[in-house]
Length: 286
Image 1 (cartoon, helix red, strand yellow):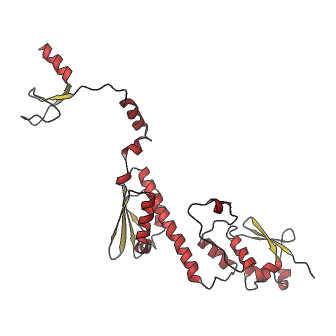
Image 2 (image 1 turned 90 degrees about the vertical axis):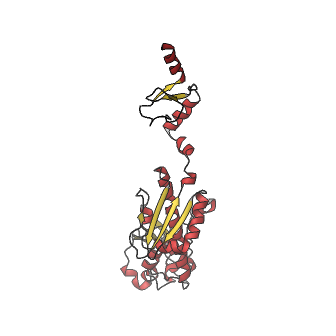
Image 3 (image 1 turned 90 degrees about the horizontal axis):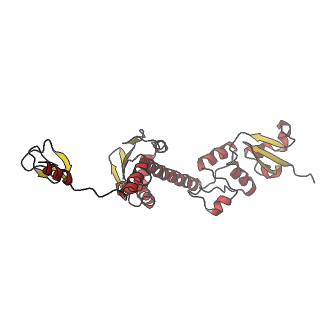
């Protein structure tokens, strides 16, 4: 019996090794056709059995698994890798990246295409939510406590009431942001409230637009900002050592002393501030 030939596939610099029979078991695919015996003379390997393809090396993991198992084993990557997912040998690949490789290598899309489409939609919804989160963080870093973001039904460019660095991630959703907000507004609200517990989100809409107002004023606290400010730390350090100041009195143009308010018999023009001790010294001089 003829020995099965081992094939090395160099996909964008990442090397995979398999048997010729594994590939030819699916003759309707690119690699299954390429390695048929009838095409042997057309092949020009490097190092006797290595073939290079300038394609996505990570996504090819799932292509080769199809040849081995007959199934597309891809799952949407998690937002936060768990210990088990971090140690997994499966690369993190988006559905769009996978789809491009399936088409190129002529791998048939599973019959249940709607399930694959739903997975892609879930991935896109997550990406949209994370882009909103990143924009909120960017706004806080710019000391902005409110954002208004509008998406249009006709796919017009997304509008952000305050232009800040970080909104480019959302601008890619100009074409579908309206539908995402329309169908998943409650999901977005719950997610953002889980990340920013005191944030308020309001939805406004019209015939051709959906607008989100994100109000961060409830957690936009001076103390949290001040503790990272050189000025805030300087003032906090000097407050404990500063002597108590004498009460401040004001003298109006008619030499009437008032304490912290406008002179009752004038408009308050030419008011100057003195301490009580200064006024006592002045009385002694008189």
